[in-house]
Length: 418
Image (cartoon, helix red, strand yellow):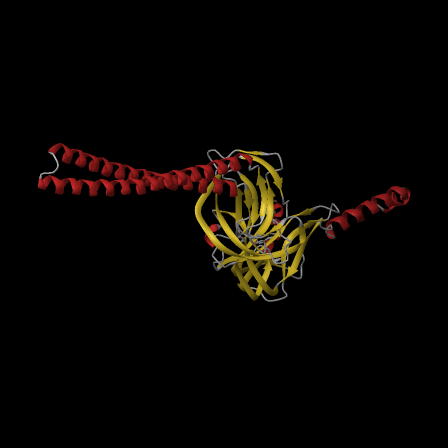
């Protein structure tokens, strides 16, 4: 062997280098192409959140319409105009209704004149009746003494009956005249009411949030009242109509704290509270949801009706508790780094119920984490409460990072499937 080596020094050197490389590869393990990312166990607040979305609505929105038909001649307000109760918003052409009022007023005057004639006829008929009555009494007294014939008595009696009938007729005409006055007065009041309705007024103070009419528009109020304006009575208080999935509605209670954002102010978080839970379900594309009404304070006036609200209803909160990031209770290391007796993590149970599960705690060997059975309490979106099983500041594994690519990270589910 030594002789061959001396005769072939170059080949011997190459073989020696190759042997050393093989031994190094066998003895010294290769560097791993991944690493585990860990975060410490901290103490703080854990909140359970129900997410939903909805629309902002004014607390009291009033539709202002018209009860008469006609052409709009004037509009005195615009979008966002503040109005007070009784303020004129628009006017409908009153020409036709003014003519109706004039005609009804003339009918009232005619009825009153007819009544005056009837009352004059009553006076005349009463006078005639009195004269005929006295004449009849004289004729009757003379007939009893034999100075007047039977025919004279009959003539006086007929004249008295005719005068009495004329008086009754005059009284009936007067009663008819009074009824005609009442009817004409009612028609006049109706016409005057229609004339007043040509002025569209605000029923309450507020802000005009929608205008549906312009000068020259023809309003047809036949079977239903057309809406001309929408007035938000009080924009300092608003409400969000949020749709909550049926799977989460059982956690929602009245007066729970709510946080929400709107796209117009992405950096601002607004606060509300649950005011009402509607029990009527809404189904869309086989998804059942329930309407939850949220009361919102809008004193600064930043929120506008129709904005989309991204809602987070806080259904449970605990302060100053041990907590770990939520991914820690779902994470599992790679199979080669787990003990053979490892079992699946479990999150079965109702939200907020205390139950046991497993998390992985970093050890001295970064690729040999320790499985730790813990009791969890409130499960939030970002953190999970740990009742017992770990100590504060211990490092828990939350995900796996792939070192073969600079921008590629493997999440806990991907590592669990390997």
